[in-house]
Structure formats: structure tokens, C-alpha cells
Image (cartoon, rainbow, N blue to C red; front, side, top):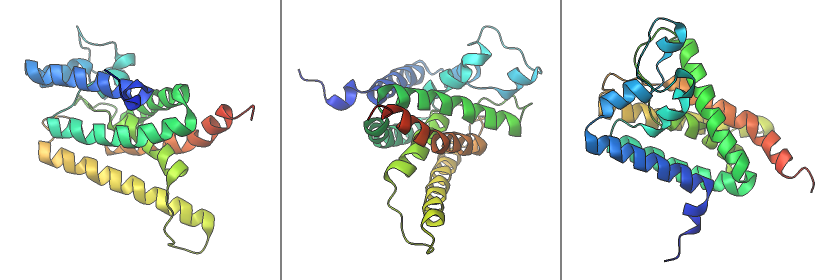
Length: 211
């Protein structure tokens, strides 16, 4: 059987791993435990909380991307991951896309920590890392509606509009899920998005450095 090229991509691999782990957690009814043991908990880095056994704190920005609060949360993130991730991967290449995703996860966690360093509520979901892909997508593919006459300023207004729309979608997910004792991580989404915007051009220049 022929495997669709989307599933052969790095984006497809990330999506497959996310689906497998998230569905396994759902089937075991272990969402709450997984959130605590695999999620990003700011207080673990602030020195006010110790968890054992648990994923090492330094790895939780990545492990948190594999845990979701509900099927709706997972489906929404997968939609944006595949839509933006595949498009960004076509422009930046496989390695840079994986790097962008990983850096986005860590920057998102750092942004959340700066806002709530002593919070014991776990942050879960791939939306922080996906935010980095969305930021890179906004610069790579954004169709810039004419808001103001200045071209550069107009471009950044459109990028900001995409960020606001993404954050509002995530707030909607949080509202539907009732948060379930987990962080509604708006700072993480903003941090991840900014990381994607900042890294898009350097990664693009690196890929085509010999062109």
C-alpha cells in the first residue's frame, strides 16, 4: 500500500506520534495523571514543587506536546499542525521544521514560566509548538489584506491578526474543556508564535545558503 507523502514528512511524523500517545492516554483514562507527569509545570522550575516519578522537568516542554485534554483539543491542534506544518516544511525543509517545532515548544514554556513561575497547574498540548509553525507560516504564505498603506506595517498587522485568531481559538478550546485544572496558556501561544516569526527568515536563508 502506498503511503501518502504527507505521512512521510517530518510534520506527518510529529502528528502520528502525537495521535498515538494522546489516544493511548485517552483509552487508559489517564489524562489527569499524564498531564501532571508529562505536562509542563512551572513550579517544578521555580523550585517550589518536586514530582517523582515524572518526566524530567527539562524534557516536559516536549512531552507536554503529546498530551491533550480532549479529542476536540487534539483534533484542533492536529488540523493546524498539518495545515501550517506541511506548508512550512515545503519552504524550510525537514530539519529546520523539526527545529522550529522544538524551539517553539521551549519558548512557549519559557513564556508561560515568566508569567506564572510558581503555578502548579500543568500546561499540556502542542499548541505552543504549533504556534511557532503558524508564525513561520504567516511570514511565508500570508495573504496581506490592505489595512494601511505602508507595506511593511501592513504585513505585520496581518501577522498580528493571525496571532490573535489563533489565541482566540485556543481560548475557545479552554472554555469548552472547562480548563480541567490545566493552564489556559495564552502567554505560551504568543511566545511560540514570536519564536516562529523570529526564526523564519534565518532558517530560510540557511536552507538556501548555497543557492
